[in-house]
Image 1 (tube, rainbow, N blue to C red):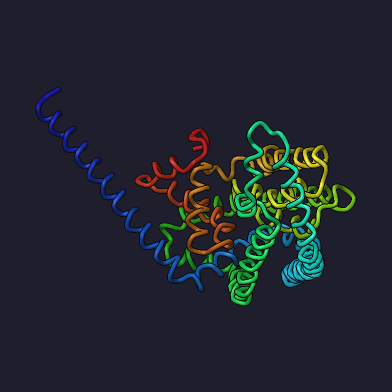
Image 2 (image 1 turned 180 degrees about the horizontal axis):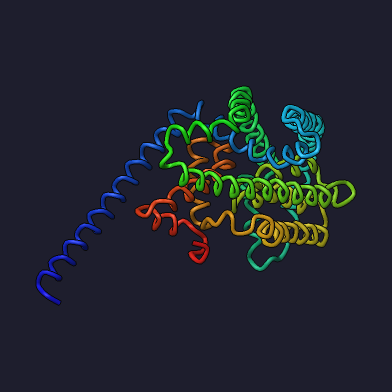
Length: 361
């Protein structure tokens, strides 16, 4: 290789290194700005993000109804009215079941203390020392803490529902501008229209696949769990309440379903015989594995393609800034971010690091 060739290659390498450093610095600045915006513009950005997610959830059934009736007003109206009625009916049953659970907490606490004393007096090869200290178990697994945990989550969701008026307004404008925004974008940015359309189409397919699979699997897992712990199963106090929590918390990737299962399992080991409690635990774990490891991946396919570590980090960050609602809607947001990063040559390596499997790239 000639001297000029080496000099030219060195210059190219220096340009690439400088470009990578510039991209990394730009991404760091953008990340900080976005994080600050998520905190200080929460009252605007969170309802908007929720409205976008709801749009992707209601779009598939709306399209089915529209193909039959041929009227957007009727199709959207039918979906919205059905959703409102469903939420109202579920809320009525949820309130009644939660009231019954709160009334039974003293009885569960008495059974908890009785079982703790029996285990403290038994020969458990040294483990009885754990049950001898009532303070340790009270802080970790007492019925009162379960009650506090449930009320805290429902309180957070209640605050989330308090923003629904803003969410509905955003959702209304998204529906109204669904078919006009593409024309306006093409008129304003004709050169970028092709790339933007590709990002929008891929994002729509990914978020729709995520929303449909998540709603279907969360509802299915919650329904089966409710049957297992209901009076026709093991008759766990608060069975409907824990079923609803399972549906809601399962939207939080990786950790949500686990958090939803722990309270009924603890109550089961308090109220049931050991064999029955173990059988219930096995059925709940099996329920999680069937929906989480088999059904949901087959429904969503490779559309999501996000690393579990990235999902976990996203849940932690959004939960920090937006609470429970942020943990739920953080996953679809990071899906869109990965797709946008994948469309630029400079940011594509970041998108590949966020992906679950580079073969899909």
